[in-house]
Length: 311
Image (cartoon, rainbow, N blue to C red):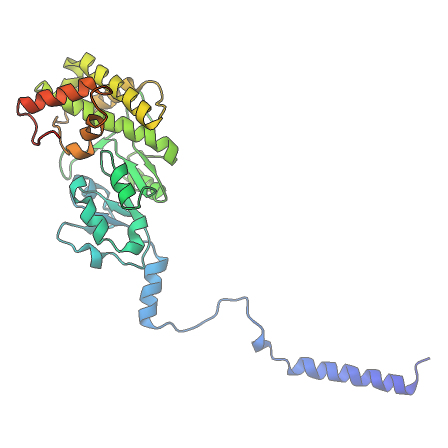
């Protein structure tokens, strides 16, 4: 049986506990709900730039105009350092010639260089490695836009109905979705899958343009149809040279894939251009590796068909 003294002590303890709980303010408990606060206007702008991705396209030419829908388009007269928010985020698609890439990268805020997406033809590895951007998003464009505003020809062929255009990197999906909105196809691939595809496109542009120039062809289609054996010999030569140099295993059927793409863009004009980004890679491998390619290049040079001098 509980004594009167013990009962009194228990009642006093309960009273103190009730009083303490009543005095404990709920406002001091951290809320799990979002806090309501007022943000200074300047901070609101910065937060908006940070949390809302903005798509930027640099270059208002044929490709840039094509993909710039709902994007911020920067032309040649737009200053890149002040046009790109250093605190922003989102893909920055570079749709320009290769010879202006260095100035674009240098002018881009350093904090945003990881967002740069390279859409150029050619061998970019040395340039990207020099700039510390080798892991950036790259796009392999298998489509032709013969003039600004003209309907594009997609790289959908009889051999590759899924399309040949490919992208790799953090903004690859964003680019694929952008092309998808235009009714064009783009495959998002890994860096390992992208590399042989990149060299295959490089082989296409180096071969068909060179043969067309050497043989006075008006188009890549003419080069492929009238000089089929020469085209095939050079492609096979360059595939073997790249495999030996880079340790890359190409999927069988390179000649057929490139011929099928040529059928799609058959009227595209020939011309050996941007040598340092295209044919130079193969030329530098030497005559032992690329005898037909290099010999044809020198033949074009001797006949004054090149707009540059060979090294």
